[in-house]
Image (cartoon, rainbow, N blue to C red; front, side, top):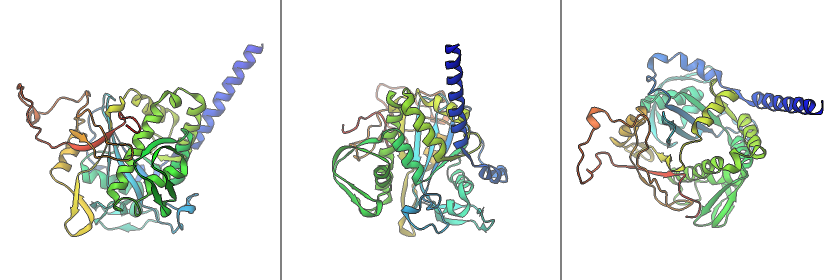
Length: 375
């Protein structure tokens, strides 16, 4: 009787936890409905089982984010990454899209029903113009890659997830002081928790040369370390740490309908657990100064199109070690990954020779989760 009661108690607790986590999830049905109107213009799906997920960091000041500025009803994409998961789940590539990249944004309809005409504008304006649907359509038009899923997280949600894993270890080569980002950190190895972590990835004007390039590098370095922390046994195999992370994630993220379920999230996470640390890479879309405004960027061709072409077809992307950063030089180590789509098209085949041929495509700087902290 006692054993039966205990089992019932565990079952009841498990159901309660499941119900709680399920209740946390926010499905973005409006974005899906809006995208369905433009199905004819969207790129075709890529190779089976490969996934392209758009990660959007919102700078909204509403919904508990008022401490970071006045809520004037606007929101922009503070950070945007296109995450490509190889079909065989043996590699992942996250590509940062600069906020100041000048892009062609299609005509979009905002939450207020107002329609904004198409035009060339900085990339981060797309989110304000028409929300996630406008960002997805802009990215698809820019890259030719179909976005299968999207995830939106705001400042508070980011802090909660960092705290849920017990903070993230970083190695800073020099002290960081930025009052606007609320960050004052000494040099050396340290663990960044919620508010400090947010300041680290947001800091821009008073660090380095104040460019968004350096800020994106810090964001990639932080996500690099965060992935390593989540992949460690200390989180995924420890229920006491895993549940707070799931609780924080499910209550902090807004996703498409397919991911807005524990089953959808579980299947996605489960499929990525076997990706080697050295095959999780972070890079920035190739870009150069905008010809009409030195404070803006534009795509650097043909490198950008070559990157998009390979991601769309689930082909390995040549990558070079990134320059030094917050935890030392990046180490791409692997310029390709042994994924199921590793076969090249007829125009990409090379003839074997004793001396490796010079790559026709220059590698793109990338960092990976393989390198240890402070190495």
